[in-house]
View: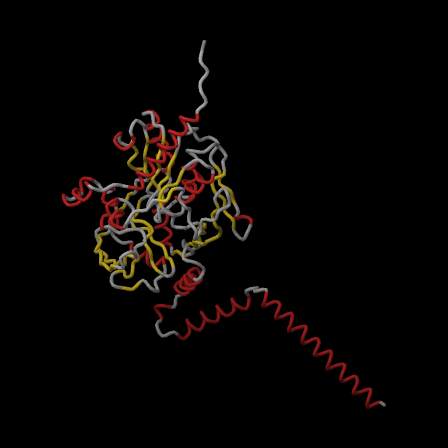
Length: 433
């Protein structure tokens, strides 16, 4: 009897220990499932310790070098737009937004693992060389870009003014591979260009204004406002805003540009992220000058990105503009720049843009109201047409004699149609007796 009792007690103890062990195992598993980070940080610290202790080249194992390399890998693994920026990169980004920097004037992004030209900035070395949106940069100075992260590529494209760089370009349409030897320059970007009334032979009796925005920087909205004031004084009846090849820029600048054509406090774009602080709405300023509600057309293409897509998407959704051209690039995510203690910074994708009707821009782009395309040859001639007239060769001048910007022509036709329709549908004025 006593022996059986002892055996029963032993069994109970074993069962209790098994139950306790299972409970502890579940607790540990749950903690690991929650991804608290402690165990991963311990692994990271141990790896750094081993590298510093045993790696053969002592020049490569400073804490700063190892930490920065780890941060680059972390950010690059998230998406093409998230980056770790060392202090010099962060300063370069600040120079960009102030519209002055050294380099080639080529806005690049990564798409499907390729380094792609979003848009060459006007009057820049890349623009003068004839680079086109969509061109793939296969090599930089002979080195393949296949495994090169975006930040490294941008750093290689930058450099001292006067220095040369060779880009190996693959043109998607023709699959042609060409080496371009470019000379870096100090680049000053004028964001609002060619503001004018279009010639009468193109518009007939109607006064249609035109302006191009090359990118959105701090003074863009004020510059555009001055140009619009001047055009309105000349009797402008309709306006065409050209955002082709505009790669974007400052979000607030794009919102302020849209505000030139919308009522005060109108929703232009919203952002949504994982945390409530990243969900925001951006509205037009309540102090912006109210303009006459003349018809507007916006020219867009595959080189129109980010801020261009915000302006085009908002004015399309709010029935304030007709979009003419091709679907935009589809860069509609928000990157927050967070400076770190050592002067470096994180450029982190924290949200996506949505148009007023809640259409997502990222990887979809903004579709035109009226589709009009240009061939690669027409795009090349359009780039030449936009070049400084003093720099054109005789051969280029001859090429341009037969060139027609068919997308602009479609926008002009659209504005003519809108104004003719508006005239016919105006209520008859009462006759005074």
